[in-house]
Length: 211
Image 1 (cartoon, rainbow, N blue to C red):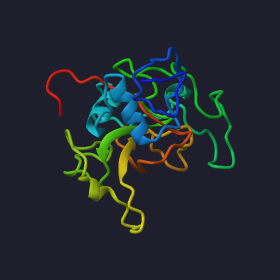
Image 2 (image 1 turned 135 degrees about the vertical axis):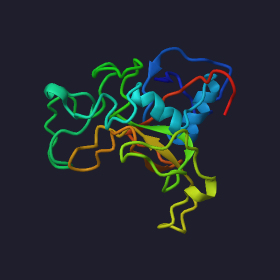
Image 3 (image 1 turned 90 degrees about the vertical axis):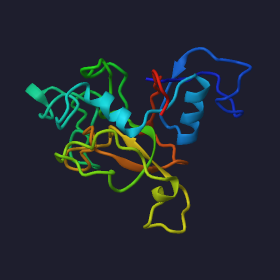
Image 4 (image 1 turned 180 degrees about the vertical axis):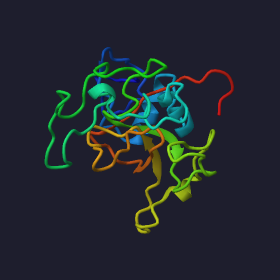
């Protein structure tokens, strides 16, 4: 997880004359702020395909990051809403909102919270459909890329010219009865100026040729 840092100022995350110590939260961050922090830290945000590859942890074709059963042996595998959304949160896993990293099992690649907790920004522009049809309902095509920027605009709101990026992973507000978007194949459009308590980010370092 790429964390924010203490001592942030209104001059922005790209300020170079001080590198404040100590991690704090990396959620409630709009896309351009997340992108700027990643660049400042010498990293980048993942594409949608990179994010999903990491989320699956080597389990290609499964419904969830850990397999096909939502709660194997009754165990909570991710921070999601327990109960009837939005009026009843049973908090049977002990958390009402975000949970500390490591509260749930890591996936096959040793990554935490690739499902639930908070949605995560990717660097791909949103499109309603992937470039090719998936072989199974749970699985996106191999290495799809995002749409052009203009195509990410919401056709239902033609007067709003704010482009949208893909967010992945679902959040603590996702319930089986409501959105079920903690599946690695699930995706959501998000306007790039939106900062919410259930949207965060993680950074990556690409090895080899840049995309």
